[in-house]
Image (cartoon, rainbow, N blue to C red; front, side, top):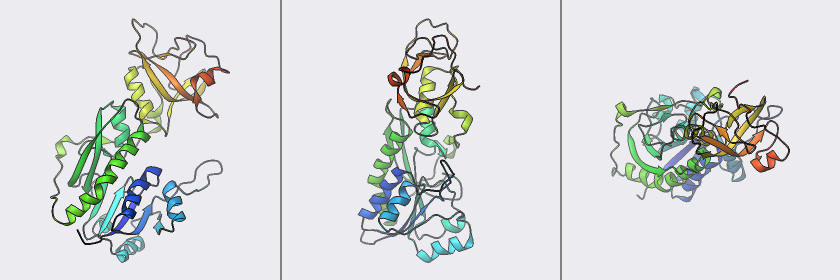
Length: 315
């Protein structure tokens, strides 16, 4: 297409959200504004610091806004005054009201990190890993007032490897989506793509991850536990208690246990092999309370764990 589109980009601020942004900047289209989530206080002293996206925007003098409430009339007017042709949304974390959805000439388009209608909602990548799925993908869709129920413009699958966690899988999905989304938008605007209704009867939902989900319960299989560890890396991390101390298991591997009659959660050797309901896991990287993540061999140099100790999901 010859026409240059006026694009607003809305994204949450994680480092991977820079990939679609740079793709827009490299295209013939005009990036007129970026919206990022309002930064939350964090760390010691609850200080507010810029996210990765904001840092890039500031360094490159790209106009951006981080409003607390997009529903305010003044915020809606600001977007109207920008006269966008498209609003591209990726991992933004805010639901857009109808007053904003109706502004762009060609609508609001979302890149969603699953093969819709599967795993609608806030945590599609985590739920793919929690369920030990072999495949996921992304969907480019027209947004409506319902969460992830809009018509589909394009979708593409991504293989999930055993080594994938939430961070690596998100990066793979984002890189692949960033290759295609400009062409998809151009074809849609040119009338070469007809939006397809989702088959809503096959919809599944991924909810916001709650704190209690991140504590490991060894009354499940080793495969299930490994799915949790992969899903909750890098944040919020998978936790358990050993001798009353909060431990994060960052990485682990499965070990087959034949005729294991021990209580799930039992430490079976001095190298931290932990029994599960089926088979066992051996952590390879862990993080003790108040310390940095380390290889297990480094941690065990100054930390003795006695075989027979029970690893608990709560105190």
